[in-house]
Length: 471
Ligand code: G3H
Image (cartoon, rainbow, N blue to C red; front, side):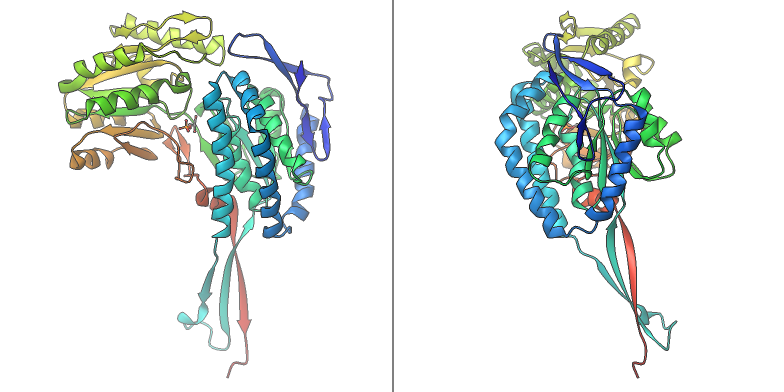
């Protein structure tokens, strides 16, 4: 069976305890690959290596860093078909979606390189205040890398949700310890192995895979880590917040992205965007449309069209059977409490087809819990005021969509939604990757992107030039 290794400094290592984890492909649940389960000592060693490498990497010229990344891009382009195949197999993503994840990730590296080339500092003239008469002070405000960054990515985008942390971190002069989610570790390791083949110096990026219960807290609590960039569940995000050492945390957590469909919506646009937003990658996206808030005047027609279109879908599998069981629990809870199962998707193990539940209400679990799977609930509201009130009851605040052809109405509703992004007349979605992206409340903190992430992964530094004897 194919086996991935840990990358610690210059070594591709096995687990020192001899422990491995077998990954099953979601397509058939058969064993697909093995990854190493790093020990706590190996996790600490990875931080040692990153901290040592920082001393030289931070002084590597920007042109040298950019040149290495040009070579990385060329190497990734050569390998993209093979990488996409592995990704598709490991996380049950359709081949075309896996290809798109690889392409978009290569594109993202280019965007960060462009953003970095445009980064500027600021000049401060001290004589404006009149506080210093005998000398002239000029402040040069520049940006410096932070040090060692810990990147932790989720199973659903092992490549894209790691590159959006790792590329800005390294290009800005930081070094990285990367812990991918277990499912996704094999593809992520294959992807980043190309970085070393292209000339990234050893130690600048270190990859540790394995069980979070063994190495998670060791990584998070190490005082040499200067920033944690995490994508994953709200529960784990909260845990990181509690035990980390007071450093900045870029958290991209769960979502309950609503589709607010007013009586003025173009129903064809709303239907196709919601179906695609709700069910692509089987709903396993933090930005999936996870609840429809439909005005009474359009709800029946919208439900019928959503059912009609969703029934034609043939979805990829869910990541595992436990996630599929959870979807079953949410459907049962809602129907037992009086919701109407308008479309009942067929299930076989971890394969579920699309389900739609109409007339849900806030006391049902599916209203407050993030389903992360192929079931879309509809809650009906009488008007704008009620739509905004219901939306405010959702704990999450990642994205929301407003479907209305009345631009005043769309902007009025948008201005009242506490989320990181509002999409007007389109599905909730993170891209294009040069756009800022982030959530509030249970969905995380800080807007990330290209310029935004570079800013977060560097700190300001002021150097003051003091000129005397100017008279
Ligand atoms: O799962 C969380 C991702 O950030 C969603 O990204 O909108 O590109 O699917 P996406």
